[in-house]
Image 1 (cartoon, rainbow, N blue to C red):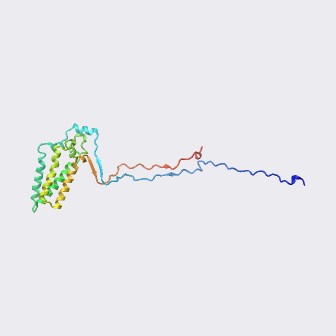
Image 2: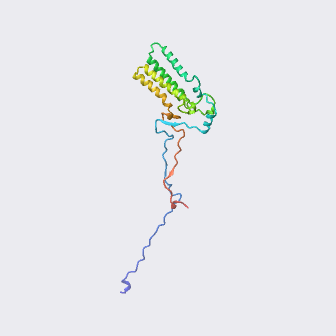
Image 3: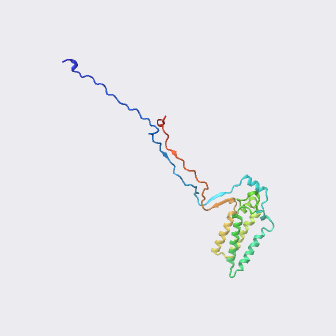
Length: 234
């Protein structure tokens, strides 16, 4: 036998089949996932039960206050304005004593409570002026804040502070320090003297939480990722 028959013929090497990468098209590519922000409350609520706000005034309002005459607050410095408090207290005491069976402790307690209630409403609750003057410069201020242009420790304010204290001492004396009547008169007096403190000037206390009148902006969708360059269809 020849030498060519003893050696087998060499086999060709196997061919490798390489599949080209598929390019995503706009029709086959799935849209990127979108993360939608959950909507929050439509209105903002205050986290506290009691909120404190300060009344701020613009430069125009300050000019209007200094330019005009405020008849709503200047009367407290007139002659006879201080005496009228004593006269009203005595008239109320006489009218209450006319009631049959009225005792002195109850009579002075009713006079004290009535004066404190009217004093609080007049000086610390009602805002603005009953006159169409000063271009509404005092619409946000109480009568106590309007007196003497907001200055503290003036003679008029000292007198208006001493009258509730004196009436409380008189009512305490005639009630013979009864615990129930004393506590009632004391709470009423503190309720009137508290807004007169200079540290509380132009402060407003609100008990219930306030809702914002402006609704929050609607949620905007945000993409969770940015598409790669290979995903862009040229």
